[in-house]
Amino acid sequence: MQLKASKQISADISEFKGRDLRTQELRERGLLFCVGIAMPVLILILWEVTTRQGWIDELFLPSISGIVSQFFAIAKKGYAGTPLIAHVLASLRRVFTAFGIGTVVGLLLGLLMGYYKYIRAAFYVATEILRPIPPLAFITLFILWFGIGEVSKVLIILYAGALIVMLNTMEGVRACPKEKILAARTLGANDLSIFAFVIFPAALPNIFTGMRVALSVDFGILVASELLAGDLGIGYIIQDASTFFNVEALFVGILMIAFFGVVSDFLLRLISARVVHWQG
Amino acid sequence: MSQSIHIPSPVTHQPGSHQTKPHSSTVAQEEIIGLDRVTFGYSRKHLVLQDLTLSIQRGEFLTLLGPSGCGKSTIMNLIAGFYKPLAGLVTHGGEPVKGPSERRGVVFQGNALFDWMTVEQNVAFGFRFQPLPKIEKQQKVKSIIELVGLRGSERKYPYQLSGGMRQRVAVARSMVVQPEILLMDEPFAAVDVQTREGLQEELLKLHEQVSGAILFVTHSIEEAVFLSDRIIILDRNLGGIYDETIVQLPAPRYTAMNRVSDAFNQYRTDLYLKMKAIG
Picture (cartoon, rainbow over the protein chains, first blue to last red):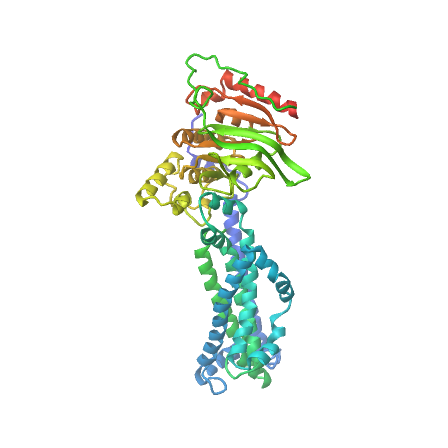
Protein backbone atom coordinates (compact mmCIF):
# COMPACT_ATOMS: atom_id res chain seq x y z
CA MET A 1 0.00 0.00 0.00
CA GLN A 2 1.23 3.38 -0.90
CA LEU A 3 0.74 6.46 1.18
CA LYS A 4 -1.51 8.98 -0.45
CA ALA A 5 -1.83 12.68 0.02
CA SER A 6 -4.90 13.51 2.08
CA LYS A 7 -6.53 15.33 -0.83
CA GLN A 8 -6.25 12.25 -2.93
CA ILE A 9 -7.72 10.14 -0.18
CA SER A 10 -10.73 12.36 0.23
CA ALA A 11 -11.21 12.31 -3.53
CA ASP A 12 -11.16 8.53 -3.38
CA ILE A 13 -13.95 8.31 -0.87
CA SER A 14 -16.83 8.10 -3.27
CA GLU A 15 -19.67 7.66 -0.88
CA PHE A 16 -19.12 10.85 1.12
CA LYS A 17 -22.40 11.44 2.90
CA GLY A 18 -23.40 14.87 4.06
CA ARG A 19 -21.23 17.90 4.68
CA ASP A 20 -18.57 18.40 7.28
CA LEU A 21 -19.34 20.38 10.42
CA ARG A 22 -17.53 23.50 9.31
CA THR A 23 -19.53 23.80 6.10
CA GLN A 24 -22.74 23.14 7.98
CA GLU A 25 -21.92 25.84 10.47
CA LEU A 26 -21.15 28.40 7.77
CA ARG A 27 -24.31 27.61 5.88
CA GLU A 28 -26.37 27.91 9.01
CA ARG A 29 -24.85 31.25 9.88
CA GLY A 30 -25.56 32.55 6.41
CA LEU A 31 -29.13 31.35 6.64
CA LEU A 32 -29.65 32.96 10.04
CA PHE A 33 -28.33 36.26 8.68
CA CYS A 34 -30.72 36.08 5.72
CA VAL A 35 -33.69 35.38 7.99
CA GLY A 36 -32.68 38.30 10.20
CA ILE A 37 -32.67 40.64 7.19
CA ALA A 38 -35.64 39.13 5.38
CA MET A 39 -38.07 39.44 8.26
CA PRO A 40 -37.94 43.23 8.72
CA VAL A 41 -37.91 43.75 4.95
CA LEU A 42 -41.02 41.60 4.71
CA ILE A 43 -42.75 43.59 7.43
CA LEU A 44 -41.87 46.87 5.70
CA ILE A 45 -43.26 45.60 2.40
CA LEU A 46 -46.41 44.36 4.08
CA TRP A 47 -46.76 47.69 5.86
CA GLU A 48 -46.38 49.70 2.69
CA VAL A 49 -48.71 47.49 0.62
CA THR A 50 -51.54 47.34 3.17
CA THR A 51 -51.47 51.06 3.82
CA ARG A 52 -51.14 52.06 0.16
CA GLN A 53 -54.03 49.81 -0.78
CA GLY A 54 -56.12 51.44 1.90
CA TRP A 55 -56.71 48.17 3.73
CA ILE A 56 -55.67 49.91 6.90
CA ASP A 57 -56.96 53.37 7.72
CA GLU A 58 -54.20 55.96 7.44
CA LEU A 59 -55.29 57.39 10.74
CA PHE A 60 -54.13 54.20 12.46
CA LEU A 61 -51.08 53.44 10.38
CA PRO A 62 -49.67 55.84 7.82
CA SER A 63 -47.75 54.45 4.84
CA ILE A 64 -43.99 54.37 4.97
CA SER A 65 -43.72 56.65 1.99
CA GLY A 66 -46.05 59.04 3.79
CA ILE A 67 -43.85 59.03 6.88
CA VAL A 68 -40.73 59.60 4.79
CA SER A 69 -42.21 62.54 2.93
CA GLN A 70 -43.49 63.96 6.21
CA PHE A 71 -39.96 63.66 7.61
CA PHE A 72 -38.56 65.68 4.71
CA ALA A 73 -41.33 68.21 5.07
CA ILE A 74 -40.52 68.70 8.77
CA ALA A 75 -36.81 68.78 8.01
CA LYS A 76 -37.46 71.53 5.50
CA LYS A 77 -40.01 73.69 7.29
CA GLY A 78 -39.39 72.74 10.87
CA TYR A 79 -42.04 71.74 13.39
CA ALA A 80 -44.25 74.20 15.25
CA GLY A 81 -42.15 77.08 13.97
CA THR A 82 -38.88 75.59 15.17
CA PRO A 83 -36.32 73.96 12.86
CA LEU A 84 -36.09 70.18 13.23
CA ILE A 85 -32.43 70.37 14.11
CA ALA A 86 -33.27 72.55 17.11
CA HIS A 87 -35.72 69.92 18.36
CA VAL A 88 -33.18 67.17 17.86
CA LEU A 89 -30.35 69.08 19.51
CA ALA A 90 -32.51 70.02 22.47
CA SER A 91 -33.37 66.38 23.06
CA LEU A 92 -29.85 65.10 22.57
CA ARG A 93 -28.42 67.79 24.83
CA ARG A 94 -30.86 66.84 27.60
CA VAL A 95 -30.27 63.13 27.32
CA PHE A 96 -26.49 63.30 27.08
CA THR A 97 -26.05 65.93 29.78
CA ALA A 98 -28.11 63.77 32.09
CA PHE A 99 -26.44 60.56 30.97
CA GLY A 100 -22.94 62.04 31.37
CA ILE A 101 -23.46 63.48 34.82
CA GLY A 102 -25.58 60.50 35.87
CA THR A 103 -22.86 58.07 34.86
CA VAL A 104 -20.21 59.94 36.86
CA VAL A 105 -22.44 60.20 39.91
CA GLY A 106 -23.59 56.58 39.66
CA LEU A 107 -20.04 55.39 39.12
CA LEU A 108 -18.66 57.18 42.18
CA LEU A 109 -21.51 56.09 44.43
CA GLY A 110 -21.35 52.54 43.08
CA LEU A 111 -17.60 52.27 43.67
CA LEU A 112 -17.93 53.56 47.22
CA MET A 113 -20.91 51.39 48.00
CA GLY A 114 -19.29 48.34 46.49
CA TYR A 115 -16.02 48.78 48.37
CA TYR A 116 -17.06 50.09 51.75
CA LYS A 117 -19.47 47.82 53.59
CA TYR A 118 -20.56 50.61 55.89
CA ILE A 119 -21.46 53.02 53.12
CA ARG A 120 -23.39 50.19 51.47
CA ALA A 121 -25.21 49.46 54.70
CA ALA A 122 -26.02 53.14 55.15
CA PHE A 123 -27.63 53.40 51.70
CA TYR A 124 -29.05 49.89 51.54
CA VAL A 125 -32.62 50.65 52.59
CA ALA A 126 -32.83 53.74 50.40
CA THR A 127 -31.64 51.95 47.27
CA GLU A 128 -33.85 48.94 47.86
CA ILE A 129 -36.87 51.22 48.15
CA LEU A 130 -35.96 53.36 45.14
CA ARG A 131 -34.93 50.45 42.91
CA PRO A 132 -38.42 49.13 42.07
CA ILE A 133 -40.06 52.56 41.66
CA PRO A 134 -40.33 53.56 37.99
CA PRO A 135 -38.55 56.92 37.68
CA LEU A 136 -41.50 58.25 35.71
CA ALA A 137 -43.52 58.16 38.93
CA PHE A 138 -41.37 61.08 40.10
CA ILE A 139 -41.85 63.33 37.07
CA THR A 140 -44.52 65.60 38.44
CA LEU A 141 -42.75 65.70 41.77
CA PHE A 142 -39.54 66.83 40.05
CA ILE A 143 -41.48 69.50 38.16
CA LEU A 144 -42.94 70.65 41.46
CA TRP A 145 -39.49 70.81 43.06
CA PHE A 146 -37.33 72.07 40.21
CA GLY A 147 -39.74 73.97 37.98
CA ILE A 148 -41.09 73.14 34.61
CA GLY A 149 -37.94 74.00 32.62
CA GLU A 150 -34.75 72.21 31.68
CA VAL A 151 -33.62 71.42 35.21
CA SER A 152 -36.41 69.04 36.12
CA LYS A 153 -36.18 67.26 32.75
CA VAL A 154 -32.43 66.71 33.03
CA LEU A 155 -32.65 65.75 36.68
CA ILE A 156 -35.27 63.07 36.21
CA ILE A 157 -33.24 61.51 33.38
CA LEU A 158 -30.08 61.85 35.45
CA TYR A 159 -31.68 60.15 38.43
CA ALA A 160 -32.93 57.21 36.38
CA GLY A 161 -29.55 56.61 34.72
CA ALA A 162 -27.44 57.20 37.82
CA LEU A 163 -29.39 54.62 39.81
CA ILE A 164 -28.79 51.98 37.16
CA VAL A 165 -25.09 52.75 36.75
CA MET A 166 -24.67 52.80 40.52
CA LEU A 167 -26.28 49.41 41.07
CA ASN A 168 -24.28 47.80 38.27
CA THR A 169 -21.01 49.36 39.41
CA MET A 170 -21.64 48.16 42.93
CA GLU A 171 -22.26 44.63 41.69
CA GLY A 172 -19.09 44.79 39.61
CA VAL A 173 -16.99 45.85 42.57
CA ARG A 174 -18.46 43.17 44.76
CA ALA A 175 -17.95 40.52 42.09
CA CYS A 176 -14.21 41.24 41.92
CA PRO A 177 -12.54 37.93 42.87
CA LYS A 178 -11.01 38.11 46.31
CA GLU A 179 -7.82 36.47 45.07
CA LYS A 180 -7.07 39.42 42.83
CA ILE A 181 -7.37 41.89 45.69
CA LEU A 182 -5.30 39.73 48.03
CA ALA A 183 -2.69 39.15 45.34
CA ALA A 184 -2.32 42.90 44.87
CA ARG A 185 -2.04 43.38 48.60
CA THR A 186 0.71 40.79 48.95
CA LEU A 187 2.55 42.55 46.15
CA GLY A 188 2.65 45.74 48.17
CA ALA A 189 -0.35 47.68 46.85
CA ASN A 190 -2.13 50.05 49.23
CA ASP A 191 -5.89 50.71 49.28
CA LEU A 192 -5.77 53.44 46.66
CA SER A 193 -3.66 51.36 44.26
CA ILE A 194 -5.92 48.36 44.73
CA PHE A 195 -8.85 50.58 43.90
CA ALA A 196 -7.23 52.03 40.80
CA PHE A 197 -5.46 48.96 39.42
CA VAL A 198 -7.68 46.10 40.52
CA ILE A 199 -11.19 46.92 41.67
CA PHE A 200 -12.03 49.61 39.14
CA PRO A 201 -10.85 47.68 36.07
CA ALA A 202 -12.47 44.50 37.41
CA ALA A 203 -15.79 46.37 37.62
CA LEU A 204 -15.51 47.90 34.13
CA PRO A 205 -17.51 45.19 32.32
CA ASN A 206 -20.41 45.71 34.74
CA ILE A 207 -20.02 49.47 34.52
CA PHE A 208 -20.41 49.36 30.74
CA THR A 209 -23.40 47.06 30.99
CA GLY A 210 -24.94 49.53 33.40
CA MET A 211 -24.18 52.45 31.08
CA ARG A 212 -25.87 50.73 28.15
CA VAL A 213 -28.99 49.92 30.13
CA ALA A 214 -28.99 53.44 31.57
CA LEU A 215 -28.73 55.05 28.14
CA SER A 216 -31.70 53.17 26.75
CA VAL A 217 -33.75 53.97 29.85
CA ASP A 218 -32.63 57.62 29.59
CA PHE A 219 -34.11 57.89 26.09
CA GLY A 220 -37.41 56.61 27.41
CA ILE A 221 -37.46 59.09 30.29
CA LEU A 222 -36.43 61.85 27.89
CA VAL A 223 -39.50 61.39 25.73
CA ALA A 224 -41.75 61.13 28.76
CA SER A 225 -40.37 64.29 30.29
CA GLU A 226 -40.76 66.17 27.02
CA LEU A 227 -44.32 64.96 26.61
CA LEU A 228 -45.24 66.65 29.80
CA ALA A 229 -44.07 70.20 29.30
CA GLY A 230 -42.18 72.49 26.97
CA ASP A 231 -42.25 73.28 23.27
CA LEU A 232 -38.95 71.84 22.15
CA GLY A 233 -37.62 68.36 21.63
CA ILE A 234 -38.50 65.11 19.90
CA GLY A 235 -40.84 64.20 22.74
CA TYR A 236 -42.64 67.48 22.18
CA ILE A 237 -43.11 66.61 18.48
CA ILE A 238 -44.58 63.28 19.48
CA GLN A 239 -46.89 64.89 22.01
CA ASP A 240 -47.98 67.73 19.75
CA ALA A 241 -48.53 65.46 16.75
CA SER A 242 -50.66 63.18 18.91
CA THR A 243 -52.91 66.02 19.99
CA PHE A 244 -53.62 66.96 16.38
CA PHE A 245 -53.85 63.35 15.15
CA ASN A 246 -50.91 64.01 12.85
CA VAL A 247 -49.98 60.34 12.86
CA GLU A 248 -47.28 60.73 10.21
CA ALA A 249 -45.43 63.31 12.30
CA LEU A 250 -45.96 61.10 15.33
CA PHE A 251 -44.16 58.30 13.52
CA VAL A 252 -41.37 60.67 12.50
CA GLY A 253 -40.83 61.47 16.16
CA ILE A 254 -40.93 57.83 17.25
CA LEU A 255 -38.52 56.73 14.52
CA MET A 256 -36.08 59.54 15.32
CA ILE A 257 -35.94 58.40 18.95
CA ALA A 258 -35.37 54.85 17.74
CA PHE A 259 -32.62 56.04 15.41
CA PHE A 260 -30.69 57.99 18.05
CA GLY A 261 -31.20 55.23 20.60
CA VAL A 262 -29.81 52.58 18.29
CA VAL A 263 -26.88 54.70 17.11
CA SER A 264 -25.81 55.75 20.59
CA ASP A 265 -26.07 52.19 21.90
CA PHE A 266 -24.00 50.99 18.98
CA LEU A 267 -21.31 53.58 19.72
CA LEU A 268 -21.30 52.67 23.39
CA ARG A 269 -20.92 49.02 22.45
CA LEU A 270 -17.94 49.84 20.26
CA ILE A 271 -16.29 51.77 23.08
CA SER A 272 -17.09 48.99 25.53
CA ALA A 273 -15.56 46.31 23.30
CA ARG A 274 -12.43 48.45 23.04
CA VAL A 275 -12.06 49.17 26.72
CA VAL A 276 -13.02 45.80 28.21
CA HIS A 277 -11.42 43.75 25.46
CA TRP A 278 -10.61 40.93 27.89
CA GLN A 279 -14.30 40.14 28.27
CA GLY A 280 -15.75 37.54 25.93
CA MET B 1 -2.41 10.50 67.37
CA SER B 2 0.36 12.34 69.06
CA GLN B 3 2.60 14.87 67.41
CA SER B 4 5.58 12.90 66.33
CA ILE B 5 8.67 13.98 64.50
CA HIS B 6 10.19 11.46 62.15
CA ILE B 7 13.64 11.78 60.80
CA PRO B 8 13.79 10.53 57.22
CA SER B 9 12.86 6.92 57.07
CA PRO B 10 13.79 6.00 53.53
CA VAL B 11 17.41 6.83 52.86
CA THR B 12 18.85 6.96 49.38
CA HIS B 13 21.69 4.60 48.71
CA GLN B 14 22.43 5.44 45.14
CA PRO B 15 26.01 6.11 44.18
CA GLY B 16 26.75 9.76 43.66
CA SER B 17 23.58 10.84 45.31
CA HIS B 18 25.03 12.41 48.41
CA GLN B 19 24.47 15.88 47.09
CA THR B 20 21.47 17.36 48.75
CA LYS B 21 20.20 20.88 48.98
CA PRO B 22 22.02 23.00 51.53
CA HIS B 23 19.05 23.45 53.79
CA SER B 24 18.82 19.88 54.96
CA SER B 25 19.99 19.08 58.45
CA THR B 26 23.68 19.50 57.63
CA VAL B 27 23.61 23.29 57.48
CA ALA B 28 22.91 25.69 60.32
CA GLN B 29 19.28 26.69 60.01
CA GLU B 30 17.68 30.04 60.41
CA GLU B 31 14.01 30.41 61.05
CA ILE B 32 12.15 32.67 58.67
CA ILE B 33 8.56 31.92 59.70
CA GLY B 34 7.49 30.70 63.08
CA LEU B 35 4.11 29.63 64.40
CA ASP B 36 4.14 29.51 68.16
CA ARG B 37 1.21 27.62 69.70
CA VAL B 38 -1.21 29.09 67.20
CA THR B 39 -4.93 28.52 67.64
CA PHE B 40 -7.42 29.52 65.00
CA GLY B 41 -11.08 28.97 64.23
CA TYR B 42 -13.85 30.83 62.50
CA SER B 43 -15.52 30.85 65.87
CA ARG B 44 -14.21 29.99 69.30
CA LYS B 45 -16.38 26.88 69.33
CA HIS B 46 -15.17 25.46 66.04
CA LEU B 47 -11.42 25.50 66.02
CA VAL B 48 -9.44 24.56 62.94
CA LEU B 49 -6.01 24.72 64.50
CA GLN B 50 -5.07 24.30 68.10
CA ASP B 51 -1.69 25.01 69.64
CA LEU B 52 0.17 24.49 66.39
CA THR B 53 3.88 25.08 66.53
CA LEU B 54 5.75 25.12 63.27
CA SER B 55 9.00 26.54 62.04
CA ILE B 56 9.99 27.28 58.45
CA GLN B 57 13.66 27.68 57.65
CA ARG B 58 15.17 30.26 55.36
CA GLY B 59 15.24 29.00 51.78
CA GLU B 60 13.65 25.61 52.39
CA PHE B 61 10.89 24.01 50.34
CA LEU B 62 8.29 22.84 52.83
CA THR B 63 5.09 21.07 51.83
CA LEU B 64 1.96 20.62 53.90
CA LEU B 65 0.13 17.43 53.14
CA GLY B 66 -3.06 16.27 54.73
CA PRO B 67 -6.71 15.40 54.34
CA SER B 68 -9.19 18.07 53.28
CA GLY B 69 -10.24 20.33 56.07
CA CYS B 70 -7.16 19.71 58.20
CA GLY B 71 -6.21 23.36 58.18
CA LYS B 72 -3.56 23.50 55.45
CA SER B 73 -5.05 26.56 53.80
CA THR B 74 -5.68 28.15 57.17
CA ILE B 75 -1.98 27.94 57.98
CA MET B 76 -1.23 29.68 54.67
CA ASN B 77 -3.74 32.42 55.37
CA LEU B 78 -2.30 32.96 58.84
CA ILE B 79 1.24 33.25 57.53
CA ALA B 80 0.15 35.52 54.68
CA GLY B 81 -1.49 37.76 57.24
CA PHE B 82 -5.02 37.36 55.85
CA TYR B 83 -6.17 35.88 59.17
CA LYS B 84 -5.19 36.68 62.73
CA PRO B 85 -4.72 33.84 65.23
CA LEU B 86 -7.13 33.57 68.14
CA ALA B 87 -4.20 32.67 70.34
CA GLY B 88 -0.47 32.25 69.82
CA LEU B 89 1.88 34.10 67.55
CA VAL B 90 2.92 34.04 63.89
CA THR B 91 6.32 35.57 63.33
CA HIS B 92 8.32 36.50 60.27
CA GLY B 93 12.02 36.93 60.95
CA GLY B 94 11.19 37.19 64.64
CA GLU B 95 8.65 40.00 64.13
CA PRO B 96 4.93 39.34 64.59
CA VAL B 97 2.95 39.18 61.35
CA LYS B 98 0.47 42.05 61.35
CA GLY B 99 -1.07 41.80 57.90
CA PRO B 100 -0.21 41.04 54.28
CA SER B 101 3.25 42.13 53.21
CA GLU B 102 5.28 42.07 50.02
CA ARG B 103 7.91 40.08 51.94
CA ARG B 104 5.54 37.12 51.87
CA GLY B 105 4.33 36.25 48.38
CA VAL B 106 1.21 34.26 47.62
CA VAL B 107 0.32 32.17 44.57
CA PHE B 108 -3.35 31.29 44.45
CA GLN B 109 -4.97 28.31 42.78
CA GLY B 110 -6.14 30.51 39.94
CA ASN B 111 -8.19 33.55 39.12
CA ALA B 112 -5.66 35.94 40.62
CA LEU B 113 -4.16 37.43 37.47
CA PHE B 114 -5.21 40.88 36.36
CA ASP B 115 -7.14 40.23 33.14
CA TRP B 116 -6.77 43.83 31.99
CA MET B 117 -2.99 43.75 32.08
CA THR B 118 -0.55 42.08 29.72
CA VAL B 119 1.73 39.30 30.92
CA GLU B 120 4.52 41.84 31.29
CA GLN B 121 2.35 44.28 33.26
CA ASN B 122 1.12 41.48 35.50
CA VAL B 123 4.65 40.33 36.28
CA ALA B 124 5.85 43.89 36.87
CA PHE B 125 2.91 44.77 39.12
CA GLY B 126 4.79 44.40 42.41
CA PHE B 127 7.51 46.74 41.17
CA ARG B 128 5.05 49.63 40.98
CA PHE B 129 5.38 49.89 44.73
CA GLN B 130 9.14 49.49 44.98
CA PRO B 131 11.70 52.26 44.70
CA LEU B 132 14.03 50.50 42.29
CA PRO B 133 15.62 51.99 39.20
CA LYS B 134 13.42 51.46 36.16
CA ILE B 135 16.11 49.63 34.22
CA GLU B 136 16.66 47.16 37.03
CA LYS B 137 12.92 46.44 37.20
CA GLN B 138 12.75 45.89 33.47
CA GLN B 139 15.72 43.55 33.54
CA LYS B 140 14.29 41.48 36.38
CA VAL B 141 10.91 41.21 34.69
CA LYS B 142 12.55 40.23 31.43
CA SER B 143 14.74 37.57 32.97
CA ILE B 144 11.98 35.93 35.01
CA ILE B 145 9.66 35.91 32.00
CA GLU B 146 12.38 34.06 30.18
CA LEU B 147 12.92 31.68 33.10
CA VAL B 148 9.30 30.56 33.17
CA GLY B 149 9.19 30.15 29.41
CA LEU B 150 6.90 33.05 28.62
CA ARG B 151 9.15 34.80 26.12
CA GLY B 152 7.13 35.94 23.15
CA SER B 153 3.97 36.20 25.25
CA GLU B 154 4.89 39.43 27.04
CA ARG B 155 2.23 41.45 25.24
CA LYS B 156 -0.49 38.85 25.53
CA TYR B 157 -3.38 39.06 27.96
CA PRO B 158 -4.19 36.27 30.43
CA TYR B 159 -7.29 35.21 28.50
CA GLN B 160 -5.08 34.46 25.52
CA LEU B 161 -3.03 31.95 27.52
CA SER B 162 -3.60 28.34 28.57
CA GLY B 163 -4.20 27.46 32.21
CA GLY B 164 -0.60 26.34 32.67
CA MET B 165 0.76 29.52 31.14
CA ARG B 166 -1.44 31.61 33.39
CA GLN B 167 -0.06 29.89 36.47
CA ARG B 168 3.45 30.54 35.16
CA VAL B 169 2.60 34.23 35.06
CA ALA B 170 1.23 34.05 38.60
CA VAL B 171 4.37 32.36 39.88
CA ALA B 172 6.63 34.81 38.06
CA ARG B 173 4.66 37.77 39.38
CA SER B 174 5.09 36.61 42.96
CA MET B 175 8.71 35.60 42.60
CA VAL B 176 10.05 38.61 40.75
CA VAL B 177 9.84 40.80 43.85
CA GLN B 178 11.90 38.20 45.73
CA PRO B 179 9.75 37.54 48.79
CA GLU B 180 11.47 35.81 51.68
CA ILE B 181 8.78 33.18 51.56
CA LEU B 182 6.35 32.20 48.83
CA LEU B 183 3.06 30.64 49.88
CA MET B 184 1.52 28.36 47.29
CA ASP B 185 -1.92 26.93 47.98
CA GLU B 186 -2.45 24.08 45.51
CA PRO B 187 -1.22 26.30 42.69
CA PHE B 188 -1.18 23.54 40.05
CA ALA B 189 -4.41 21.79 41.02
CA ALA B 190 -6.34 23.15 38.07
CA VAL B 191 -3.99 22.13 35.25
CA ASP B 192 -3.60 18.79 33.49
CA VAL B 193 -0.97 16.26 34.51
CA GLN B 194 1.57 16.93 31.76
CA THR B 195 1.44 20.67 32.25
CA ARG B 196 1.64 20.15 35.95
CA GLU B 197 4.89 18.22 35.72
CA GLY B 198 6.43 20.95 33.61
CA LEU B 199 5.33 23.56 36.11
CA GLN B 200 6.82 21.58 38.98
CA GLU B 201 10.17 21.34 37.24
CA GLU B 202 10.19 25.06 36.49
CA LEU B 203 9.27 25.84 40.06
CA LEU B 204 12.27 23.87 41.29
CA LYS B 205 14.55 25.72 38.88
CA LEU B 206 13.12 29.03 40.03
CA HIS B 207 13.57 28.03 43.63
CA GLU B 208 17.24 27.45 42.94
CA GLN B 209 17.64 30.89 41.40
CA VAL B 210 15.50 32.89 43.78
CA SER B 211 16.59 32.46 47.33
CA GLY B 212 13.29 32.55 49.27
CA ALA B 213 11.60 29.72 51.10
CA ILE B 214 8.50 28.08 49.69
CA LEU B 215 5.53 26.78 51.64
CA PHE B 216 3.50 24.54 49.40
CA VAL B 217 0.10 22.98 49.97
CA THR B 218 -1.01 19.97 47.97
CA HIS B 219 -3.14 16.84 48.02
CA SER B 220 -0.71 14.98 45.81
CA ILE B 221 1.91 12.81 47.49
CA GLU B 222 3.93 12.61 44.26
CA GLU B 223 3.98 16.36 43.94
CA ALA B 224 5.08 16.73 47.55
CA VAL B 225 7.95 14.24 47.22
CA PHE B 226 9.17 15.64 43.92
CA LEU B 227 9.26 19.23 45.13
CA SER B 228 9.99 19.30 48.82
CA ASP B 229 12.95 19.35 51.15
CA ARG B 230 10.58 18.63 53.99
CA ILE B 231 7.02 17.34 54.11
CA ILE B 232 4.67 17.79 57.02
CA ILE B 233 1.55 15.66 57.28
CA LEU B 234 -1.17 17.36 59.26
CA ASP B 235 -3.54 15.38 61.38
CA ARG B 236 -7.24 15.42 60.67
CA ASN B 237 -7.75 16.49 64.23
CA LEU B 238 -7.19 20.24 64.74
CA GLY B 239 -4.21 20.45 62.46
CA GLY B 240 -1.64 18.85 64.68
CA ILE B 241 1.58 17.75 63.03
CA TYR B 242 1.23 14.03 62.47
CA ASP B 243 4.47 13.37 60.70
CA GLU B 244 7.51 15.09 59.31
CA THR B 245 9.63 13.68 56.50
CA ILE B 246 12.86 15.07 55.18
CA VAL B 247 13.26 14.30 51.51
CA GLN B 248 16.72 13.64 50.17
CA LEU B 249 16.76 13.02 46.46
CA PRO B 250 19.76 13.49 44.19
CA ALA B 251 20.43 16.94 42.74
CA PRO B 252 19.41 18.43 40.44
CA ARG B 253 16.00 17.84 41.92
CA TYR B 254 14.09 18.73 38.79
CA THR B 255 15.30 15.80 36.69
CA ALA B 256 12.60 13.42 35.50
CA MET B 257 14.59 10.48 36.94
CA ASN B 258 13.61 11.69 40.39
CA ARG B 259 10.02 10.80 39.60
CA VAL B 260 10.71 7.13 38.96
CA SER B 261 13.69 6.32 41.17
CA ASP B 262 13.49 3.73 43.95
CA ALA B 263 14.10 6.42 46.52
CA PHE B 264 11.15 8.41 45.19
CA ASN B 265 8.91 5.36 45.33
CA GLN B 266 10.08 4.59 48.83
CA TYR B 267 9.11 8.07 50.02
CA ARG B 268 5.82 7.82 48.20
CA THR B 269 4.90 4.47 49.72
CA ASP B 270 5.94 5.63 53.12
CA LEU B 271 3.86 8.80 52.92
CA TYR B 272 0.94 6.95 51.41
CA LEU B 273 0.80 4.59 54.35
CA LYS B 274 1.01 7.43 56.80
CA MET B 275 -1.81 9.27 55.04
CA LYS B 276 -3.84 6.07 55.06
CA ALA B 277 -3.24 5.73 58.78
CA ILE B 278 -4.90 9.05 59.55
CA GLY B 279 -7.71 8.23 57.13
